[in-house]
Image (cartoon, rainbow over all chains, first blue to last red; front, top):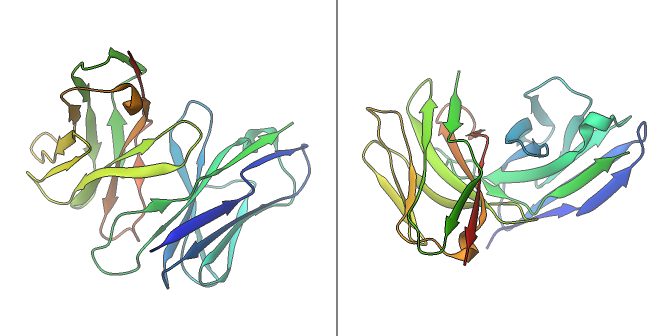
Length: 114
Length: 113
């Protein structure tokens, strides 16, 4: 069966510090991968998605970047965090086959920037 | 573009009450429709989905019917339980969008004993 992991589970960082959040998927190959952010009291916003190694598409301009160094690894980064980067970050995957549309989410990382 | 609108929350119900959470959408193309649920402190779980008009998705006593004529996908449950307290998200995906989901803003449901 497939599983998706995220770490760390929680993180408190000062403004201006760097960030690295990691997401890995097990039990599948060539997945589509996604990063979402959920700000307090708001819905989910798609930040990045990837359809293959090294292929990253950004959905919104922001202070963050994403990378996919391996097929089942997706990393969210920032060089300098802002207060507005606080939120709950969710990684998700979906099968890369025609007609597949369901996404499966990880447990999330709660980031607080002080 | 694509968008999803959910009824404003929060929703507070007593156990065994009937639940409806409204969801309407706009989409370029023929979307698949989803309801995801987020329990406190956790990630999202797929609750149910429907991929074509008049399909009914169902799971754990929840149901939603894909209504193309009204562009709606309302979530219903006949008798809620305390354990159903969570945030519910309506979402859509269009076939040409690499599986990207467009989410509604979420509806907080609290069920009291």
